[in-house]
Amino acid sequence: MIARRQFTGRAAAALVAGLAAPALLAGSGRAADARTLRIGWQKNGVLALAKSQGALEKRFADKGIEITWAEFSSGPPLLEALGAGALDFGPTGDVPPLFAQAAGGDLLYVGTYAGSPAGSGILVHKDSDIRTIADLKGRRLAFKRGSSAHNFTVKALRTAGLTTADIEPADLAPPDALAAFRSGSVDAWTIWDPYFAVAEADPAARVLTTAEGIVPAWSYFLANGSFTAANPDLVVDTLDELAAVGRAAQGDLDATVPALSKITGVPEAITRVTLTRKGADLGRVDGPVSIEAQVYQQALADEFHDLGILPKKLNIQEIVWQPKAS
Image (tube, rainbow, N blue to C red; front, side, top):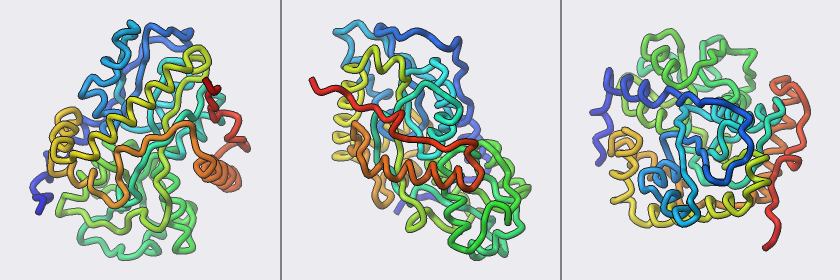
């Protein structure tokens, strides 16, 4: 049994605060430079493991390519930096690329990676009278606008015949949402792992629902468009190395848990929870983006435009990278 109740209270708040702050990036709009690969990362998944192992540094050492890393707490600011040319490569959930494309960012979908629908959830206070999704009507629900939690919130509310107009949304990044949730200034919180697993372990919180059966867990790797055009082999090799790292990690979770815990600062017990969710698979890194993923993403773009969330209609295929056959 995993002692999930031990990591609570101030310790949880301190951890999430530590996961939150994006690294400041100097400059933007840099011309493509094959001597450096600048990666944005978040404290989860195969990219964090690759960072901890120096896998990409080793892969590209003979090419004289330097790897630099910038940390982010969510996808929207990461893709803003990537689209502006301040990053070359990074991971995200399903919604951030839509807003980045709508904003005219120079970016491309280059690959997908596996997530678990059980790794996202809506939390309420343990003693709350909110017992069903329908009970969220009129309540203050925190989620990060433009993130995968935004999509999950829309879809979850729909199962109860509600829309975001029926709640009081609070647009909060994970650390701010945690503070608001713990103080009682929000009634509920939609969030993803590892933040979800951290908060879920607090005995003062209760899971209202996970995303299972509500929304699939598509996640993506994106790359700066100009960088990709100039360095296509670098993008292909990066995805190939991440797949290799992921397969090895998935095959030995007993070694992977402490390794990921060390790089992220998330306790091992919590890390094990995130890696053993139903459907989680670090080795499922694919590129290029499949037709199935593109169809899903296009439907999501159309839905968010119809709901008035996105300011313009999007054609996802315009920014899906198709590497040339060698």
